Length: 433
Image (cartoon, rainbow, N blue to C red; front, side, top):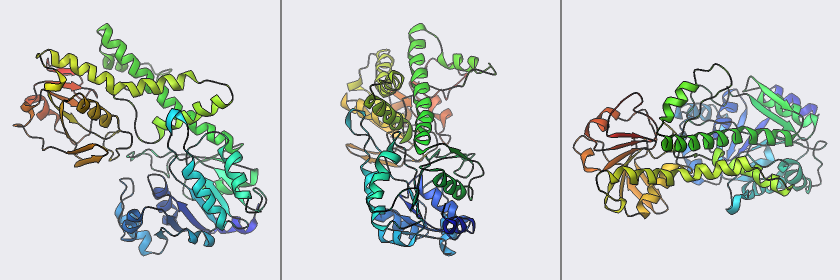
């Protein structure tokens, strides 16, 4: 282990670069800067960099005053110039890892970042990947790419995988309160990475390898996609059987062990849950193993907006209406309650399907004033008593806190409550998922 780098980390004299200033990178950068590290945030997005250099945050979990403070004290700067990497001791990679078609991981962003790092790599540099990926990426892909520099991993430079565990909008668990997982390419790589993260995170768990850390992250996310998929299947089953799925979940929750509640809805959104488990599905197939649970759960969750449309057709038939002659209002368009994030949001898919069926669709969301995504060009309506009766049905797609649900209930003709906001309320015009 490099004594020089270890000493720099201990004394907070190591200079850090964070590649990618999104939901993962920016909170990391801010928290390292808050404890006294000199941090450079690097991003291709000129608008992001401009806003940060104007001391302004664009992420809900990072307050603007925090950005202003660390920049005023000289602990943080943002740039689009990757040449700054020649001046740093630690590089943390936080770039997107989307999916291509047929559940194939798109690791082009990781490869691009790693190739850039290789240009500026130097002896004793610590490189950490936080982007979620398939087991083996760090050892089989990143290590050989970086070693093209002539330096050897574990001897001349240090390489680890430490998966992000960010939960956007979770005020109880910010990045400093979520236990950190670290898997080094060698024991020294892991120990140095653990030492670094201990400066901002109380609990850091070191596993035996980068591959074990990569697999652990995918186990966490697969656990969620499988259980969400299962409860969505249960919801469809309960509807067929004439049973209230929400009552069943509340009853099951009374058991003090052996049960963890998950809730049905339009599927899963954000970056992690829709995509990450499918990296594991893809990697397993390379070894001749088919993960039936992951594939079935992903397919079930993707089907939920279509199922919601089928249920809407049932509701509209009560008034002798069809989709193509109906006016519908969608409440909430983000993938998660109270979080300003539209990435892979299932309500957007619902709107897209309804528009394709020639329904007239509008939406209300207290935190998303307009939608301009691909073919979706809509503006949030003003939620007023005299507006609600115009809609044949109001659909509660995302249960934001700052929505006047009493107003909706009082003035709407029909309500399709996908998120159970009207729990324990018996009203003939409210239909639950």
